[in-house]
Image: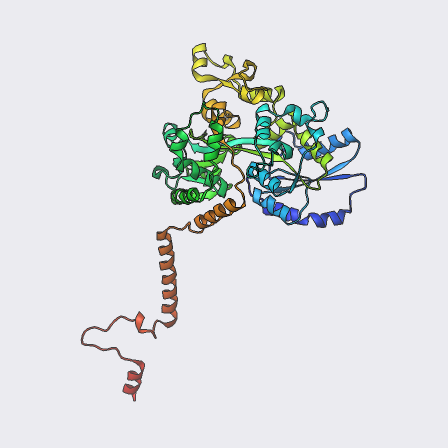
Length: 517
């Protein structure tokens, strides 16, 4: 899934690809090879966990290969490999590894485009009259507007290219906290917001992600909490002002952020990538910083396998709105790459991927809305009375995501369980507009700022041991050395001997020999 670590097996598999290609021989001249590099566990892998629930259900890659040959009359083979972080993917690209499609996050899309690694999508890709162009016909208007309004290179006023020129959306979401309802009172959370990370009431009971960008964003939210609260959400420039605050990288801000990050470092249980869910279920920790898709996955798994109730909380001051999208490195097979994106953008395939990985896709349309309703809408007949129904449900409005202008449309509303709509899977899967409105996208910081922030992160991570822990370790080492010396030289070193009683003197081996003579 997004931001999960590569397993040793996956790494070994990637390393063996050249060997395997040699052993199996080159592809036939008529076969196309499409090289796709994606997050681990970030696509439908078929089998019993798939939408079909059938052990023999084909994975999405197999489905694409079959569809492509039927559609274009040419066989295609997908070389599908995975990465663990945006930086892992970037480093592989810098090393010269060649791909036709990558799936980086928003800031990495900007970085790759600014460094001239990417080629744009063709004009034909954005033609809705072309039958095979499923992406442009089905992408959510909300997502499309977001991609079209965010510039790739904000440092260059002459560069007017946007995300939509170089990227097609795949998954999106927000950030917040998963919390164990057995230990955490939900009523205490709104007043704290992101300061949960530094609040001593949660000392050693909260974890955060082991990456610099999420940690920096949280520290900014804590540092400028009052300034953010002073913004008027109804103002036309609210989103712009919020984004400016949450992307500050001047020297003074970095210095202040470091102080906040040190407070966080002293208060949290640990930095983690995959261990948060297990630790929160066991009660070792009470809260865990999470991406919304991972929150859905964790809540489902904890409830089904462990009988533990986990809820999701999004701080009221702001949160990070993130996107992952498909981009084509220079030299990519444009036709095959765009066909892959279009195939994943068919509503049926988008639903299959969302069901399998737990994240929210960028594809809208009636089929997707029906899927959401089937998953989360409640039946009034399940309640004993109308009063009980109204007391335990709420109207959930997703017009902003599905309608062209974002205006209210009753057709895209449904009744949902009140808890689902405010703190459970639905709330994480498709946050209401009031939440997404107060979210900010993280920009690519630029080379100089990025280097300064990475140095900050190195200082924080290099000083994770508290003073008392360092003292304990030093004392422990000294004791071990002392014991070794005592065992080996104890009889020969005066330091290890007790002083003689008053009136007596210590007799040496030489004195004894002289006496015997």
